[in-house]
Image (cartoon, rainbow, N blue to C red; front, side, top):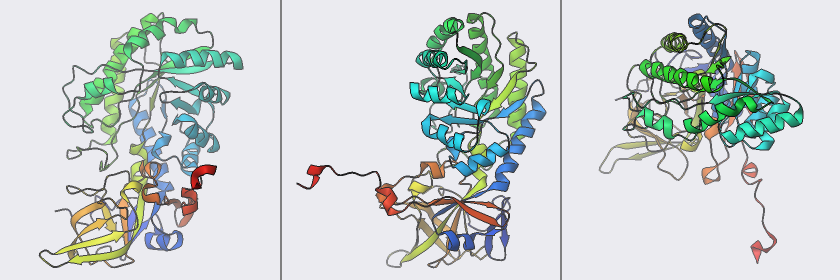
Length: 464
């Protein structure tokens, strides 16, 4: 049975225990809850900067044939102030769609640092991306044509990457995300990426697109496995396919190779991954595997690695442990007839935590009782959220005696929780606070009920 008692594994930077209070950096989480209200997302700027530097330095130490460039996925935490920190840390920015492009522009991301990804790009998005000198990751033949046409109208060159779908059918490995299914099958049927049949046709005619500059290749598999053997196979398959299209392009060599994301978060407790119960390799292992395999594969296929830029798109890997989610206990229930059962009803929801509300096997996230740190566990609780769903965020797990006003801190929620939040039950979504040392500021305000309904309109005949 898992315990909510403080452990060295969970109480790690940017978190600390001072007396019976949980701190994030030098901010008392209980005081943050009093000042800004709950539920509340809280992000550590210091931890975010640390993670970026750690990723960059770790991969640069292993890939010395060319530069290393990070393009953190904006979707992991698309808040302007958070992206502004990443801009200050000199990272690129992987974006999807017009909303994320606007966020990146507002956060000061420009030029080569903007990488416009994703499927179903329309003409307006491609034109705006080119106006801001962004590069575009092609996902279909249609997008190649749109890039050539819009670049011609603007009198510029469209820098593009070809998003490929490497063939992993020879690898016998099940997905952590979807147990029972092979990674090689899932990476082929997933919608994103150019089907290899269409890729060959694009490669054969890209030289005839006068306003397109193919700068590199791109692959992305998602969080299917943290086993290094998968990354070895993934990179080898990507370079084998790169060689095939290189021949169709007259011996072309990519200037950059983006191996995508899908790396696990440091503690790998993400609720959308089904299988996490095996050792998570250190980042150094992933960096060595990717860099060593990339160099060997390039040489095997007749490419000179010198000067090629290695690119990565960490989302959860950079963001997950930067954030916590605070929620207040609003009510306690107890059953003594026929069973001994305790519920702590809190003011957050599964829909704010990028998870589901029926967590009988493991909690939606690890947690602390932020104002009773170190107190002995005294009872088993279901900590339950506030929507009309089951909302079992923790099931019969130990905690100190809980009371109305206590504060629950869910850990490692810096990736995907806020952007996945919805208005189920017409609940306003929480705000976000950014902390640096003892300073704290609201960087996305909490919604109001008025915000929830601001898009609603009533036709004239609705009240007839």
